[in-house]
Image (cartoon, rainbow, N blue to C red):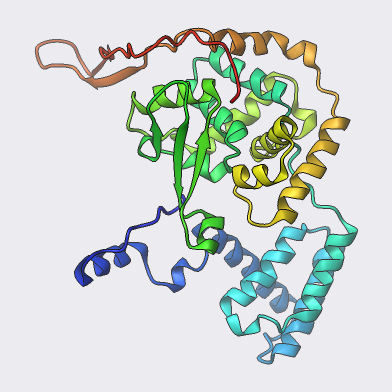
Length: 353
């Protein structure tokens, strides 16, 4: 879960309460998920030393040599580059004074990167996105459909989708724009500023506003169930061989938007990248990957049609569950929402602003 930024308290007492909730400064240096990865990598490194009968060196140069030997072990045993990177980062996180003193190890990691391309998530073509949303509509799962649209057109990271709540959304009209507050994301923490997304894709804004006004619950109830749905829908559409992953949504969205407006500077703002190198990798590798894909478009057209038709129809009334009165019935009963939004027709064609 991404921690949201807090406005500094006006008094000392308020700041003390807020900072207790946030935790110590040391605990805030890395995200909880990142710390978990670091701990796992460090434990594996220590297990390697124990197995080889090597004591953890107390001198920086000696530790650099041992870490370099461990990287050679990871390379020869077929481990992923991410584990090697997490190992070096975990050592520096454990002892910040090591920064700048693991030169041999970081050089080997660079050579690793140069000689073995990372296995990045392939980007989603728009037709695959729309087919998945159509399939989700057929399964009467509007929240999952919305999460897919946000990941693609909003270029949201997977963790940002999984932690989204109605209170983070500002959407007053179906025809947009809508603003999503992301708080202090990984990139935002580096800059010391909260991040946000502005969405102007009419169908996405319409669904987003409908969801916000209908519930107070998070968009995703369970991260594991969401990932399972993602994999299952791809399998049902016969797309397992393309090895799409949740991050394919963000990568596909980046390629889509660059194809729409062709502005690299605009894409940097949309995708919230601070390093041009990262965005360039997204575009160059994304365009190349899409060019090589042989998507069975004809097979997906039926589901795409379901999605297109839904974009021209009113969204179904969402239902809420509440306890039955003591005068009759057992358990819970479903009561349809009485409030109807009459501030304009929803029968608008699909369009991108």
